[in-house]
Length: 558
Image (cartoon, rainbow, N blue to C red; front, side, top):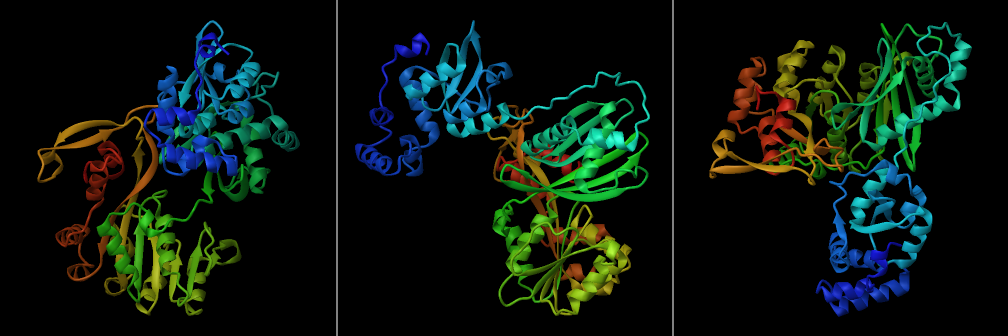
């Protein structure tokens, strides 16, 4: 332990908190009794009982002992310092090396500097002097995950990587099954999962192999690999997906399930031949908790409109938006509302992304002749009350789904269109009669996923209220993206949906045959909340930024 630490007068944490008037003697007595029964640490008990927050405890410890209180979301962590302490020791003692101060003195972030036994063990493990700083336990968990993330290590062949070679299929298969290639692919997948990626793109270039990941809807570079690794990496991914490694001229699709810790993850693998080799896209499907309608971040008005649509005895409800806009999440939340004991609910999907108790789910299989249209006909003969059609892709599926909405079924489905009114034009282009649409359509929802601002680093600024059409105020406070370690310097962390709901009734039913502009004008006159309106709501609440809303909706709308 450093000399500065040895000179401090150590007091029990309970005494510190009562001296700071953050804890009453009665609360301390209750917490100590619980500690005696359970063996939990006192700080954890105080937080569990709701007496204090972890941040409050950290602040008191730092002030009492004259230590620095670190904000790990804004603190740069030195990888060389991290390498001084094994991960298992860091997690055991809730400690993280931050950086070197001078000479061999290390700044060490800890949650409890009063734990002298831990200090002695850390001194032994580090083999050098250190100075404590206090950190928030919640932030420490995230920082440990970032600091000890598995790194990509390439074993470069001694052969000239630029030298062209005609490798036999057996040689490529041996390379793909070798430990370095397996470790490389696993490391790429691990890093992508840790960063919250939804897709991984493995893209052959003339002189390299580019690996990128889509995180919160935005693609970022993950790694650049030597060109001579391309065949081994591609073949390894084919083997994982159960695909034909000898075929390189046609598109292939496969699936594989993997585990990340205790979490199962499904990977959908799509391979497409390009001029520089086979491009591979992996879509990651995580088995996350299914959200209910009230957990989707909808405004009260949007939630009420969608709830009213789901209460109707029949009709078609369409959720539209581009790929990756959260349509399936919304559909599953709506399906959960319809899944009651007095209803027969069925789905046909490609693929089935989440299994739902009490719902009969069918996965399309074109190779076996089970298409959306053929499966939908069979479902309708099975007398369902409500059904979900994963996507309307062709005229036949569109016609069957719309007619099902007329004949007493509640139909939930998706379309790839940008706006709610665009869904009507798309169905008309597919050959569905306007008369059928005006009778069958119940409600159309358009949605996008916007990135959430990182609450640790977002920056406030003011804007004239009139510029945004906000009444009853001269100025409004908005936020723009900042930069910190917590969000990976992007300024954003996570996503939230913005919605545009267009009920089909009254004047709009009579305008189904008219232009999209006329339908949109009638819908806004009737009070429809547009994507722009919902995006502005999120901006005013400090959830996202105007720049992010414009990125997804365009200047034409915002």
